[in-house]
Amino acid sequence: MLRPWQTQFWLEESSGQSFHAKLSNQLMKDIQTGRLTSGMMMPGSRALAKQLGVNRKTVQLVYEELESQGWLISKPRSGTFVADVLPEQALSAENQQLVHTVKAPRSSSALLDNLYQSALVAEDRPGPNDGIPDARLIPYELLSRAYRRALVQSSRGACMGYGDPRGSIELRRSIQNMLTMDRFMNVSTEQVCIVRGSQMGIYLASRILNPDKGVIVLEKFCYPPAMAAFESNGFTVVRCELDHQGIDTDALQSILEKHQVAAIYTTPHHQYPTTVSMTMERRLKLLQLSKLHRFAIIEDDYDHEFHYEGRPIPPLSSLPDSENVIHIGSMSKVFAPGLRLGYLVADEGFVDRVAQEIILIDRQGNTMTELAVADLMASGDVKKHIRKTRKLYQSRRDFAASEFKRVFGDSISFILPAGGMALWVNVTALVDVNSLDAFQHPDSSLGTVFSCEQTELTHIRFGFGALNEQEISLSVEKLFAALH
Image (cartoon, rainbow, N blue to C red; front, side):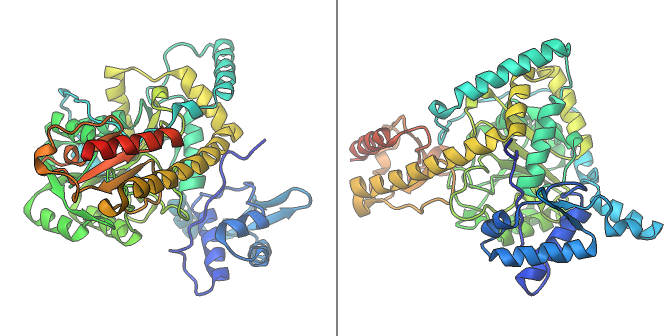
């Protein structure tokens, strides 16, 4: 059976002068913090060397050193495993307590508890949706078999009644495992709540955070349904500048000097709609500001799986000073929006409040779908599907970029995004200001819908994910005709 997830390692922040020291220190840290648990099978030396881009001998030497220190154990014809009895277990009671404190998942944040609100009145408004995945790529046979197993399992186990509003424990465990192994997030299943897509997660977060504690800060261009959710729950929205490195933290500091801020909503992985990735420096600065000025961060990590250039930067929730982060993710980009599966990750107190809201509006999610997807995640089929579709979407990105250059020439410009399913195309040189109201195109979203301040059309977000090459060519040619 396939491993559900390939364990990822981020060494840029690891201590040590040499690569050998960085890898050794990071592996020990991951074992100490509980990310790599006792008895867990380590990646093979060849696989890890390929992932890190180093010689296999380097990984073998690190493994041998950690074995000699008692962190790892090698089993003939089986592999390398985290030792059942770790060196730290011989420490004094006082130092043992310190280790357990480090191992514990994020503790409850006093800030988030202080930002809770009890208001239950809200109104949602729909917004544009682009850069969606191709539903034709869903592994229907695998999914149908998983649904059948879920139905049989539920019927035999008498699990067809009401369940946990946070979602089935099977899916929460699968997502917790994915977040731990693939995204460096040290969380427990009690900190994971299943929701019906990322929009529901955003809306629930906005329901629980208190607008009396301050404004909500959004990036200058942002996801319109998110802004609608915050406004419907009483928040005043303040816009913050962004550039090719993501949200401008200097501009954010100026906002913090003028306003009391309750929370910031951001899409750091592939900023929506501009597609830029927030740099590590900006991420750390944002987290430091959150801790200093005591505001929450709502991190919308809606398409983490589809990053094409190198390795994606770890989520905000995995970095130091992230106790005030509310992490929201989605399975919609992996399969299709119609499955309606997302997740929210925060401290246990916040998740409990989310569960209370779910009971009022939805009671619980779709148990069959949750069990079926959990089955596919545990078997490794989800990882295999992501690997397959990632290559296809990257090919479509490259083809869409070449078609824009072929059809438009130098009259448009864009930066090739590192991931995601859309291009952010600068059409300033083409568009007459008076043509904005008349311009409509089904395969793109207008740049102006992302900012309430802008009056001129300057950019178009072109979604290529749901289009094959023939459809991409046709859409680009139609777009050219509409703009000319």
